[in-house]
Length: 89
Image (tube, rainbow, N blue to C red; front, side, top):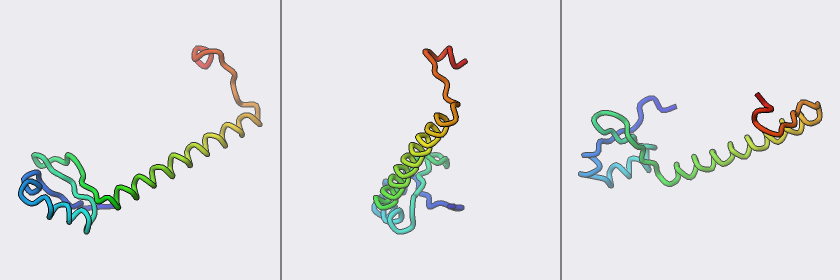
C-alpha cells in the first residue's frame, strides 16, 4: 500500500518532464495533480506490464470460478431454465 504517493504538478511536467518520468521509473507511479487534485498517473512500462498481467490472471481466475460454479449448480440441479429475463424475476 502506498501511503504517500509520488506526486508532480502539470507545471513540473512542463518544465522537466524527463525528471518526472525518471521518478516514475525509479520510485514507482507518479500521481499528477491539477489544482491540488489527483488527475492521472504516470507509470513505468514495467509497472504497467505487471498490472496488466495481474489483471489478466484475475480475469482468467474469475472465468474459471464461473465455470466451476456452473458445473456445480448443474450437478446439484440448481440451474433454472428460462426463456426470457421475465422468467427469472
